[in-house]
Length: 336
Image (cartoon, rainbow, N blue to C red; front, side):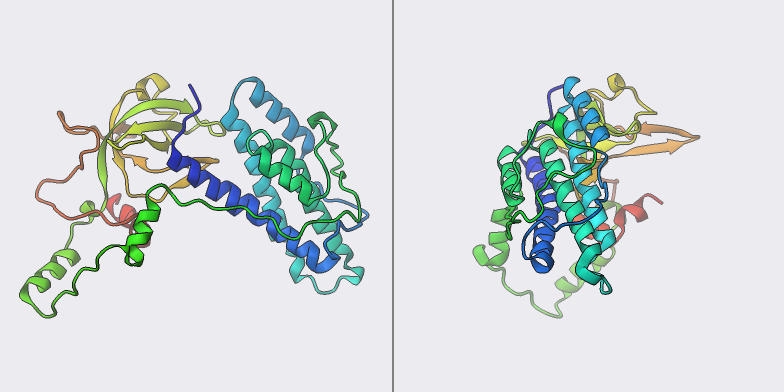
């Protein structure tokens, strides 16, 4: 299959993986380097090997040779997360008793070296940004095969630039929503208090059936592929009647074959917060039922169209936002 693409997913992945994970990591360590070592690569006797360079290199080459581009990207991003976890765990900014800042030097030098290494593996995906990262470290890239498993490539005393910018982008359509929220749209008149009508409206809102708080949509799976890092998850693109298909990860590899998943009609929970499952963005969930140990799709009514909302007969109410689904634990209540 071709690499799945949608503009919304592109922005979500950029903001989560690159701006929040990578951008935050580089900014944190450059600021710490400036604070403790006057913005130069510190000298240290030993370097913690945060990344297994040989494993990282062999797995990446294997993925590219088999044209698993998404999996190669996931490997690089996982390396970024490993570096972040190391820095967060070590907390050099909290170390007090450290004569000559030797312990801080080891931690910071190890992180700088790891960032230099991972930049090589991110270069095929973000070449301009990784070149900025190399410039930030005052060290230019080398051949992938020349990267040392000893993780010592930077020059002691080399300048580390103090600022690294990584811009976030608004989710498509969100700018207009934000503009309206800030007063771009006409303000609705304030509701009258203590009227019988408003009392009924509040009562209906409080008594809304929990099932109707979910945005359940008819969908059709148009593309399926194996998750690059999991033997339990399928990745799917689902037509839910919108301009772009919805990307969803489902733990159904042990239940359905790829052929059985393809072109299956299903019901999708649409108002869940996007989350990453093993490095792949999932923007919803397919509805399944389990009985007598058997898991099956919940099939939409015959004749329903993609994108139509699913209701229980006699129950009405507007779906809540994805934030409210999480805050109010709506899914947990429905799935009891």
